[in-house]
Every structure is written in structure tokens, then in C-alpha cells.
Length: 319
Image 1 (tube, one colour):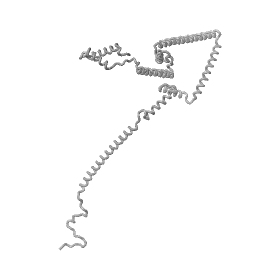
Image 2 (cartoon, one colour):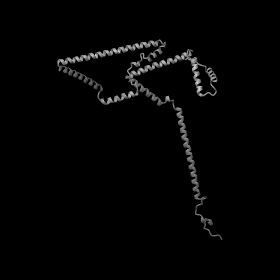
Image 3 (cartoon, one colour):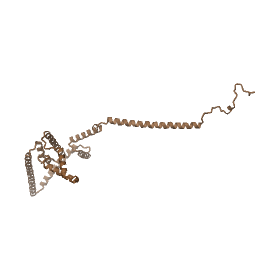
Image 4 (cartoon, one colour):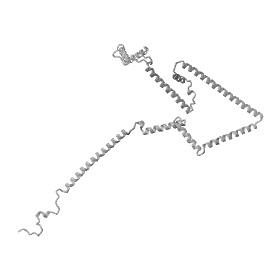
């Protein structure tokens, strides 16, 4: 007879005694942990590689963009804002130098240093008033010096006074004679210069030069050359002399070049061209005739020199 069962309950099978009320999992916990770690590592590695690739791509794109913008936007050097600003500053600086008759930046520096030193001396005082006060003081000193001289003369006895006046008269005569002699020397020097200029001008005019060439020749030879008269300590005068001379010389050289071009174009040039073919054949003939096949370098150069001198003697170079 089967065992009795409680109503409403199923009989338990022998295997139910070993169950805990939870179903057994298909895999052990250790296996699941290993797979999770491997999966996480793989995902992390893939993510890192993807990040590196994206970073490298971003850097490359940024570099390409910067290079493209630079190639498109970079203006020529003479249009670069920094270059233009530098040229504008240079132009403004040169204008300031010209306005105040200053030759160079070094001269400007000297003037600024002198001005700063003067400012330190004058301070907050009125410079014009200081000059007026100095002039007034000078007049007072001269006045009292004259009074002192008169007082000293009044203290002299007649003989001493006479000797004093005699000495002053002799000094005056000597000074007048020296001034007259100096003036005569200047006049004689000017006469000599005028005679020299006249003679040089006459000799230059006989050479048949055109007007511009004759003028340059005369200045070069010392006729009316401003260098002979300029005050070398006057910076403004020296600058004006140089600028004027350079301008004249530049125009002269330009005229010489243009004249040479015009003469050549008109077939009036004195330079006679030589046919390269003719010269080459003549040199080959000379070499074959006069030089051995095993000629040394010294022999070849010596022969070439001889040929050139011979061509000049024969007038092949009409210079």
C-alpha cells in the first residue's frame, strides 16, 4: 500500500531532499568572473585604441587646417602687417629727423641726452627767465668792470697813464695790421682759386665733352666743388652737399647709360662684335698647328694668352 500523503500536498521525491529551494546555476562563479575580466579588458583595450586613433586624427586635422589657413591667409612679405608697421614707423622716424635737421639716430640720441642733462639743471624754473637774468647779470658785470677800469686809470699818475695809452694804441695798431694782412691773404687765395678754376675750365672745354660730362669733370677736378667750401662740422651743410652731389652723379650716370644704348641701337657703337664661330675656328687651327697633342696645361694657357694679345694687336677688339 502506498505511503499516506497529506491532502493538498504532493509526495516528495527522493531527489527533493537535496534541494535548497534555489535552482542550481549552469556554470560555476569562478568561470563567470574570468570571462567578465577578459571581456572588460578587451573592451578597455578597444576603447583605448579607438581613443588614440581619434586623438591622432584630430591632431592631424588641426595641423592640416592650420597649414591650409596659413597658406591661404599669409600675405607677401611686403604686405605683412608687421612689415608695413615697421616701414611706417621708419618713415615717421625719418620725417622727424628731417624736420629737426638731424642726420642720424646717433645724433638724435646725443641731443636727447643733452636735453635731459639741461632739464636736470633747469628743473622747474623758466628757461627764458633764466636767460634774461643771465643777460642782465652780464650787463651789470660789464658796467662795473668799466667803472673799475676808470677808477684804476684815475689812480694813475700822468706818466703811467701815458704809458698805458701808448701800449693800448700799439696793440690796436698791431691788431689792425694783422687783420689787414689776413684779409689780403684771403684775397690772394681767392684770386689763386679763381685762376685755377678758369684754367681748368678752359682745358676741360677743349676736350669736346658734352655739357653734363664737362660739368662732372670740372667738379671732379676741383672747380666749384662744394667740398672745398663746406663746413665739415656743420651736419646740415654736409648732408645737403652729399645729397646734391649724389643727385647730379646719378643723373650723369643715367645719361651715360642711355647714350650708350642709343649709340648701340643706331649702329654707332665703337665696340665691334666678333663672330664666335670665326674665333673658334681660328683657335682650333692655331692649336692644331702650333700645339702638340700632349701639350701641358702651361703650354695651352701660354698659347691662349698669345692668341688674345695677337687679336688685340690686329685690332679685332675695337674698343
